[in-house]
Length: 511
Image (cartoon, rainbow, N blue to C red):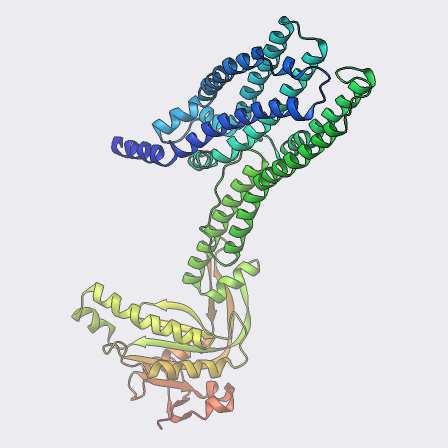
């Protein structure tokens, strides 16, 4: 157990302990650095400034920025690591994550947004305080607050998108290893929340900036009469288009990617691949959809496996009928073709060979019987030790049940002796039988009962003494189509065991 746990931890560290975490940390740093450049761009090129540029781009702001940025990066990294602490401990420990570690993995992108927002709020307050203490006027403080605030909002949005995408491999592994991987309620922002957040970043914030510029022009705050605000409005519009296109693309992909994966996997399930699974890496309703699909695919696979096992035990035709209808006890009278095939000298066979050898011989023999039945739309009703009963015309109707039974008998006769060692007798007949479910309400089987079944068994006993090893009743020939009936010739009349009147028989023609 200890070796297994150590191996699991090694695999987790090797697979997930480096690249996603490194990309996550690098993404957070880049998001904040990009935010800093956004501040500079807004102040230098976008926001209209009646004040001297030297007031904004003064030495005190450069010094404040140079001091605050590394401190903010370090503090943000420490807070991010602390927020991700349970997840990192799971990566080192391995095994199944506990509920706290599970929630941490799913909520880490949102927690990172909180960390970034806190740092940028502190940044706004710091720069306003520094410039206010240096005697900066109201206009300067408003410009700095707007620029830093807009950049902070953009940084938070970028940070969430980067965290969500880079942590997908780890989140997927966490949710795979958690037994309770389908949260009762979403543990991450949902689709509507994400779309609204990105709409706010790409549309509301730029419009808010334009509105503030217009308001400043009306109230003569920052913008004074005669200042040209067209360039600022145009710049904000271009920013809105660029940020909106990029942000909405990433947000749309965060929703479309799992949907595309599910669609592809669904096509595979439709094609019969039931072991397909999609990765689960989302704690919102998207993740619940992923988990739901995986459970659905697993359930379908289990049901298909049960159906296959059911068909192997009772036959595909019976299985299909049972699944399509509600099976009940009783049945109906059907005209069926009956083929009974029995091994000659089974007692001596058991004496000459070991049980394993006998079973191998019988399995090879029954394999030929099953294939012959399937080739002529028959149904192997049961295996009886070293014999088999094959029905044609039930449970599914057959246009020439007697002819199909006769054709299957001729095909099997060509294979005698089976495996070069098994001799058989084959009997074929046709007539009305009761076909249906026999047994108890909780345990029954589909079978065919009637005199033709008994007659076919008796004919197989008699056929063991003939050269061709096949005998059919005249009833089977009379019911078969003319083409198949012509392939048979009259044989001796026999008084079968348990019968008072003789039975006219036929055997395959020898060309």
